[in-house]
Length: 106
Image: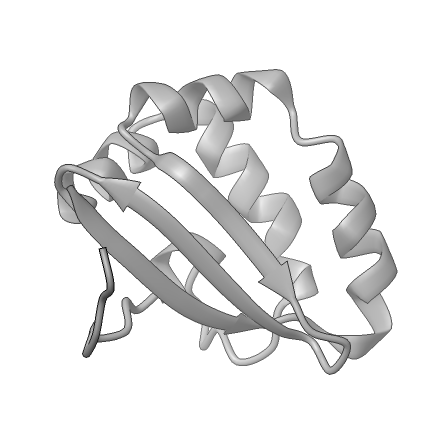
């Protein structure tokens, strides 16, 4: 199982709405993530907007491709893009660059 961690930056003026949106993620989006192989997926948000994402999957590139092929992901990414800083024209899920794991205690 591959463990993946990534960082994004949520705009400070949108933090509360970002939290609200993730308290009610669309059921079809949750289903798509699960079917695409995203497991144990968590998002952690710091008060300054730093967002840390963590997930486990067999193959992250394949899991990303599977999500990119869904219509619900396109809708979700379009709605969520306005919440983030420094995406440089990419959708949020395209801007996720995995961090390099340097230590793990199983």
